[in-house]
Length: 454
Image (tube, rainbow, N blue to C red; front, side, top):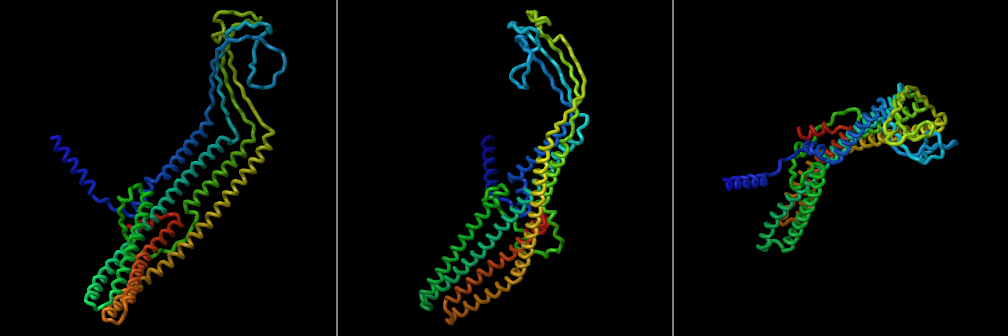
């Protein structure tokens, strides 16, 4: 039974290894890239961090509760005189200055502090965190947009390399047929041996072109595999409608504000503006309601006598209190003025960056429109080029077989046919590529993907 199970498992594994990988469309390639590409996960976690920052800013509304418990054994000598504020020499309560005996001291307490109002400062800080969250979301959308465009372009690059390779392989087949035909004529001494050598040279050149095209395919597949997260050998592409003529593009108004690039920059402007608003709310008095309860214990009497033993380890003298503290740093106005000037400059810089992005997007859109128009004209002309080149090959071949033309005419005509076939195949893809560039400039390539696989 165990042997049978092993055999079945091995057969299943072998069948799985022999199963060819499923073909993926351009839309599936983009979807897989959005799911697997590392930079998408990076920006997603940055957005999660920004969301946590909002919750952190909202904790400022909560009261602050500080607790303290301390036990020590030390001398109780005091010194009358001034000591500027510092954190090294501790303050000591006592009455005698010549007693080096030590006693226990203890203290425990809790302090609750709460700001009843702050002139909108906490709300402004929450707005800053929310703006940072919005910018992180916009950055995530921009990253997804850039990955989508790059993955779609890599897909088209693989298809273009495949179309070139197919035309090159067809040329090799054609030259091989011609070589066998001329070889028979040479053997019959109806054509000179130089003709056979010329065809052999053309065949070798076509085979070199095939090798170069296959190299281009592998390089393009590696680039695409980087986005989809699959091994290049596992990539099998379904071109869908991409090898067919692209449909007409409906005219629509171009709005650069819809682009993820512009939206990210708009979010960056909003974040800088919120920071400026928060700075404007810092130059106000700070009101703090405080309540405390504490206990102190000491092993020394008020006359300096030490109690000894464990006296002082337990806080036995209680205190409590409730108060309102108001603080105001008048001289901070000079610092705040310069901070606001710096932040205002940051806002203006982000606004200028937005105008630069809009200008680039308009240039990208106009370039894509020009490329689409030109690619459409080329795609409309290449079928005529292919038909004419095919006719030229037939005529040159007929003249050569009749002895009215040299082999050079046949070679030249065949090269023109191969180039025309490559031009025709790439012309249709160039129209689709221009459509992709146009959709990228608009900021949404989903309509392009829908048309490519429909």
